Length: 122
Length: 122
DNA sequence: TTAATATATTCCTATATAAGAATATGTCAA
DNA sequence: TTGACATATTCTTATATAGGAATATATTAA
Image 1 (tube, rainbow over the protein chains, first blue to last red):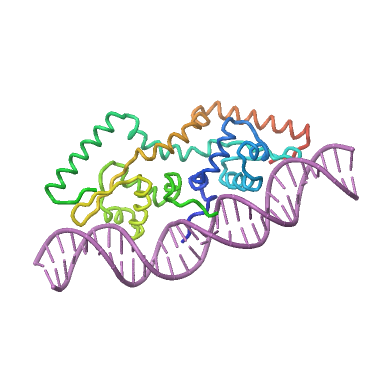
Image 2 (image 1 turned 120 degrees about the vertical axis):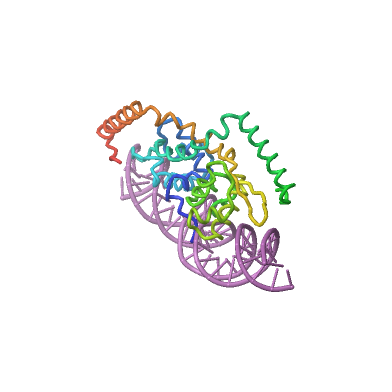
């Protein structure tokens, strides 16, 4: 089986760094024509169009035609699933001291186990 | 150019849903042997090993050997870049009312533009 | 040593890129 | 109509899966 299509869901769509760059341009909530994105990111027009196409398929951006331009706008709410998912791990890095302490304790535990059971160090 | 390797960064690594399932098993912070993950997720052992291998390469999990088992543990801090990135869009869905209002206003604006300039509806 | 258990690795195949080049499509302006 | 401009699409190519099957490796127990 091959990797899931980039258009399968938002997780796959945002995996590509250039797509996150495109999103960054739209992050102010304003609408942008394809060529404005092209100029700002120094990518080729087809490249930008394709990336916008992927983002559009997963709903992260929406388009409206205006004259000969197509104005793209961020639909940030579609990123919420990513936020919801990763937010469940937030506690692991918010309390830095607790985290460091926990890590130290774990390491100590592992060392003891190594000596006792004879398992190799990582 | 092909898609970036799944082991390029955490964004690519977590794009695969089964890898997020594996992460979910480890989410309680305890350590798990490969086979425990296999049993819980009903995936084949090689599949689990491979997914854990990808997560290990990007640092999301770490391993220590204990006897004939390899104990995997979540290294949740490695997910922070994802959190940091998506967090910048949080405001777009936290204030639901504001969001809905904004969306309505935008739609209205678009409708006016359509009538005025003659652009087609999305 | 040998068998059993746990895990990783290799081989295979269908599939899906991402980017560049070339081209098609659509829209406006004269 | 014709040309200029904006954007999308098609084609090509190198590359990277994900999973299943088979196998290799490592560790423990008898």
